[in-house]
Length: 213
Length: 237
Image (cartoon, rainbow over all chains, first blue to last red; front, side, top):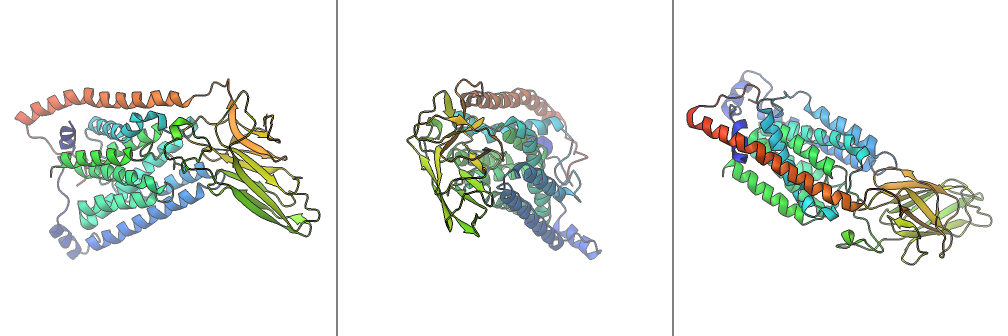
């Protein structure tokens, strides 16, 4: 099933080769790996700054919701300049992407569901805020940062780099014991992004998981 | 290694990693540090750490106590004092202590969602102090903060409003024993309600994926046998 779902989304042309990029540079187009590396570094630093500031701001009384909303808006800004397709937001076979999102959500929630007595309760009033930050985080980490890293160094760098940044971004807001699970979730979502060239499913999975918990 | 295999391995790795920390990965809101209970409910018993106390010395400058906040070292209680909050007559500093208490008056007709904390100062308050109590995300949210000025009670509601997530705040003039909770007959959702909803939600997700996936797999198999798939026009290039 997973294989079928992914294969349906994988029928896409390959990324530009190194030779193509070299030719682009020769012609004076600013799309070389170095410029992408710089862009990826800037996006990564910006995302970490926003996430850490959000974590610190959330500790002030009454500032948590504002911090999440403003932080989400700041994260979403990273997607500017990327086409929807480059971010993985294509609309073809949308129902497959939705199905993938449901599958990812099931995996993300399974450990908590199996031990439901220890599951936290997300107040209903915070649902919209939780959705906002979920979408923004996916746009930033698996969208813009992933795309920039992939251009700079290929899929392995994009997967590892976005996962490391995702984990580091949660270092201030999560107890250290949780960071292994955070990293594993980031790796799973990044691998989906790579394997299916799709960001819709990670967004849906992340939103459902955050709404449930 | 094929992509679906890598995905499956990553999913398995996630399940193992998330299983090792209760309740597993969750990210909707930064999980506050696990609540430290004096007497943990069964769901929080594994890994529970004892709550911490706090101490503050407030300077008295020109006969007026300074503004400052006392808090426990695990951040579960914060109490803020305005300038001149204390009657500082004859004092050069005022000592404030916050201690989690395991022996206190029974909260008849109440359910406490936090520990009981004894807050004391060596000078009387003359202005209301702002009190913030954090509560566990494993229990229903409390509706009010309760105060008992004496170890024998009685407990009295002093109100309470939402602060940042998983906190309740109010103001108080008297000091004494504080806890956040709700009346025992309140119809708030109990944790067991959530414990039913989450497994059902996950079961529905899995069923949905399977039910929608079977016809999809059949269609794809049929197509794969006779047709070459067209590339997507809107996927990344």
